[in-house]
Image 1 (cartoon, one colour):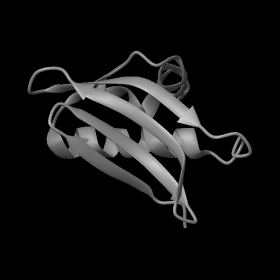
Image 2 (tube, rainbow, N blue to C red):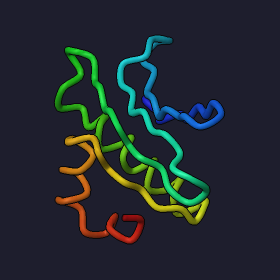
Image 3 (tube, rainbow, N blue to C red):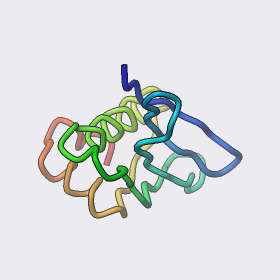
Image 4 (cartoon, rainbow, N blue to C red):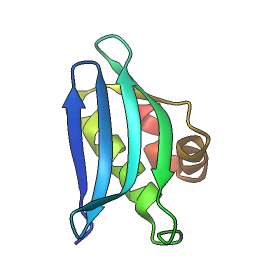
Length: 93
């Protein structure tokens, strides 16, 4: 049901959504020290526009940051626009 999943590999990570076993959306990040992640790229495959996948991944990143007590630096223009439009996410900036 298009759940956002998380994979962390050393200093990098990716939030992603699989549909029928295929990666349809992903948002990559890197750890910046112990207490921050930098979201650097968001990508949604063609045909999935308007499904809210990007916002779902940003929401998952916010939940992850709150859980771990870390901050997010949204360098990716898409992620930054979601933060700009969603005041309730600003506690993790």
